Image (cartoon, rainbow, N blue to C red; front, side, top):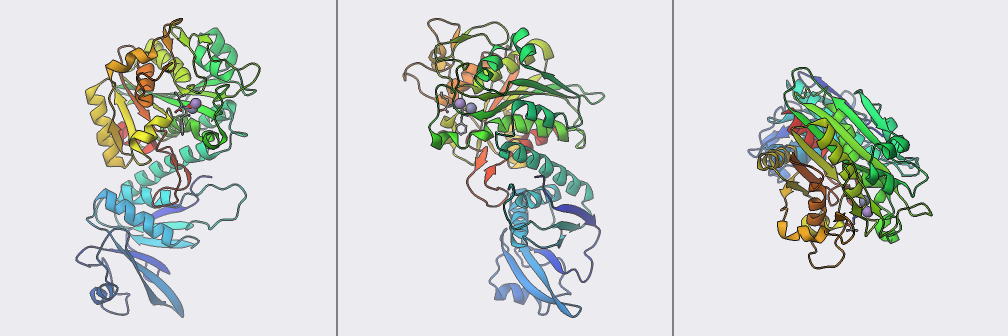
Length: 467
Ligand code: BES
Ligand code: MN
Ligand code: ZN
């Protein structure tokens, strides 16, 4: 479900707000204090407040005949990172309340707003739950920043919603329908068109499922744009592994294997409102990877877009097969200045980088630098991984141009060899690959994260494309 909390901005906090949050800094100086029953510095000292981000001192105040609450919240060093932490802590504190008035802190109000709304995100189907705060009123002058933070958070929430939706509902066709709701021109290839036009990766991965594959293209083309970026998202609506079947423990989270595709859909839906000055084409390679009598087999040789042959040694390495189609199509037909793909591609990357930082591989130094910087600014942090040439022989096949996985264990490096496989389909383009298998899901309900899909990638890509 989308974020249910509404937001508004007023120039000044209304006197007598029932529930009012007021920032204070490390010098324990609050923004306003006429409300409070005792001198505020003494009060904070009494609570041994230090001014750290995430710290909240709650004070009852008189409100007419009754009692209201002022929440004094610490802002740490006032950096975007600290403000995100402060905002998330506030929202988590007031779950279930109707209305919170927040006096905005000094600093990045977009980051603050975005984190507040993300902390309010929940996804449940029919289950009882504590509702987030219904209405957030920000008091301050940073209206444009609040609006930006609000728009970015709602894009992240859309990506989370799409990825959290069970695969019984979320077929490739369903995903194309959601993509069609984003207010930008769309083109969808059905399974017959995919076969006729040579998209052998999508056809092979999708052929085992009762739910046929789709390639989805979304286009954002503002007037006067000079650069053209293609975003490619892995859209595996469920990854059972195919005939190379996953064990249950690994399979039960795989409804989120379209998280990269969800990010691309959500980003394309937000670019216009955020005023992105670049042309962006989104490609979502959507298929369901299932075992059946019609499924592809280990040992099959397939032909992704562009005509090179691939020996499928493991049907669970399916993401790279559908991405190969989309990357090769982007290179061959769309003539972009850069291609960035985003995919829950390998379990190996969560071994390497864990759950808090995403991987970026790149064939272009400037592109890598821009993405890493955007990641730092937006809090979707990225770490550069190497495309090690020595490992390229891992992809050699005795019967085809390429193998989709290494047949032995001479090289290892599962995330790197997957990236090297993708690179084969990017021609001479500036290209970056984000492996988000580690960061695509959260196991905790904490800060800006909720259990399940994280929407990782929306913030970094929107930052990169709009700032
Ligand atoms: N969708 C998985 C990767 C994944 C694993 C995402 C765990 C999120 C959590 C991908 O399609 C896959 O199965 N990769 C294999 C590759 C292997 C067969 C070379 C993997 O990581 O084990
Ligand atoms: Mn797989
Ligand atoms: Zn997968």
